[in-house]
Length: 463
Image 1: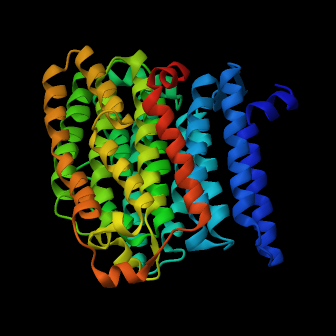
Image 2: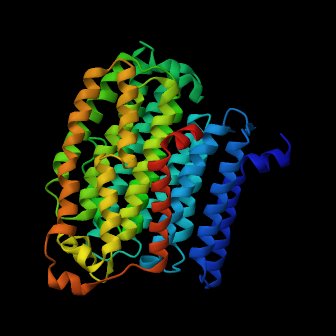
């Protein structure tokens, strides 16, 4: 390919890389003023270009067998890069123009973009690690509680275990198939060869670890609770989306094998039930969202049971709705100096009387995450279970639907605290309104929510 074609095909990656280099130069020069706005501009531009190339139907293979682009990968990049913009905006209160945070976040996004265009396990592994490693450091940045160090260590151990399992699976796959091409993975799904079957299971378990599927979820809530709000929002939305979309690139439209069916049905179902049940007992908002995230990861992997052609649409629509609601909730939480008190659910008591806008936005997010119509979470869950039933797994769809009802309780409890419970005076005195950029992040998510809720058919037509 010509240099111009490579430049166009990898334009989102080139923009992110240029932003990373420029931010590092600013850090070396000792002048990080404007780092946040520069990061927002770079990520927004990369998302816009990815969306434009998707609409044009642009396809190319800059590095044959390793890296290729097409409408599907460009769409995934555009969606996730756009979701990263609110995270950058809400980071102002915690990071201001601190140098390390922004190049780390852009590096993580760069790894995600590599994964979405990977044609081999080598490129996929490289992208997965580039996306994951910066997050371990981000958990430690601007920490406001002693548990942050422990949270970062636990997240590192989880990520390292997932990496080891992924590499072992790749090794067995290469030993059995003699290739690292992702296209050969679909044939391994239906293979009866013990080595190929073991490789598939190891790779799938690695993704389960990254996505915090039960029973591989143990330390994920600790990491969510110990990180600052922007980092928790990033892990719950962008990182979660990256892992699921990477698994989706592996599976493609291939039908699932009997062994894979058991893994993709039983463990996600347990995640749905356990995540919703455990979230009921939490007193920390971030920890509650962590267990909620475990349940939602179950819904997302449930989509893999569905027919291949509708799999991509169901997963991407769900990720959009889920991420918008989480980001809207995080962006609307009033800020405060005491991070532990701010994170406590008791601090939300009487929030509507102190900050009606914040309470309404968080309430909308909770209702959508619960799957209550007419909010987009309802349409997203409907698509998942519709595809599962269409594929013939009616029992699993019914069980998953019943499990989803368990989540309604703890989402409504948050609404009860905000609208129907008197405020605790110390909490009310300690908090203050979120900054303008955090409110802007919430406004962006609100506009996206309205579009998805009012025009779901139009959004799905773009996927």
